[in-house]
Length: 271
Image 1: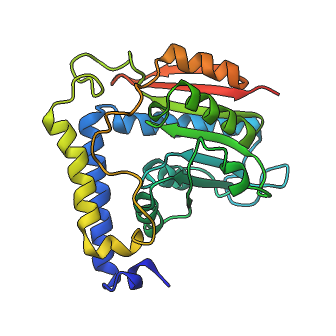
Image 2 (image 1 turned 90 degrees about the horizontal axis):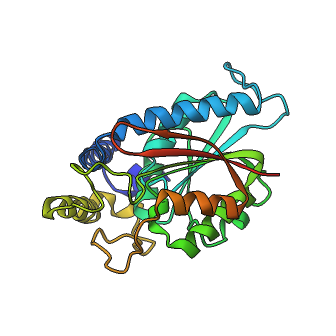
């Protein structure tokens, strides 16, 4: 049964509600991250270039030269902002999958039109291997504004899990504002004012309160409340992250800075 029918509304009404929530999500993140759109553009460009080095991909359908689809995993995908853009921008021979632990975000992502696949699962808990068992390795794993949720020990678990999911020579592309990276004038992590915090909480409150969206997530308990978590670990510095990559079996392939203060690190799985 379609998400629209389960919500009990005409499809156009539910589609409009979902579109409005996506726009509110993007507007909120553009306030937090002045380079929000630049991050996506550069990340998609890097992924397309990396795929081209792994194997030639056809531009008119069909399969890659080794007979299987190229596979990209988006960790902590949220409502699928980057996942959907990747699926639209890459050749049809690419399979793009988004993973997030929050059922509301995955519900929104699944309700949107597109070819990407979305799974509600927790990354960094050594469960993704069993979730994707039998499907083959991933060529690229990407995450954006995700690794800052992990302390040092949890980060290492996450990175080792990513390595186990990647094919030899596969790439891990991380887009993040590390603890010391953000510009001093618009530092989201160190200088949030009350408006900043309330914008995040308000998006979650409004989205959870919308009765037409309830069927997208009501069967699963919420993961994200929208409230600030005082026990949340401090985000890792870039140095800590790079050292963790090496410990987990990755080699740095490239580092790029965006004008808004984000860092994009490409690391390759060492064989």
